[in-house]
Image 1 (cartoon, helix red, strand yellow):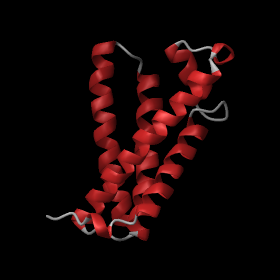
Image 2 (image 1 turned 180 degrees about the vertical axis):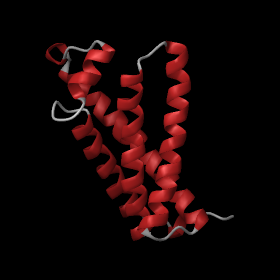
Image 3 (image 1 turned 180 degrees about the horizontal axis):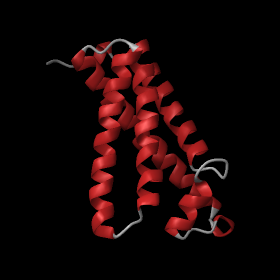
Length: 137
């Protein structure tokens, strides 16, 4: 198994990161699961410091680009150069994240509701982002 960094389409990695961030923004918005998530973790959006929120967004974008680069490396190593196979790599990656999140949540006595909100987001976004990377790689 080889990874050829010169063959990775870095613009696609950036597109996948943006996709991941947009899905996250929608997922944690009041339109979808933001209110439920905030209740589960005891966050009052009216008391959130805007500077801290902006820093959080910047850090999550940086971590997201690293995650998308790792997915691109897996796709390249497995030669999964279609939307379907890229999405499959994304699904596997997202399920691994969900499992590890679940293990932590068991010991933290977190709710099933919070687990579903926080773990289904990477599963969905990794499927879509992996598909994009696979298709455009």
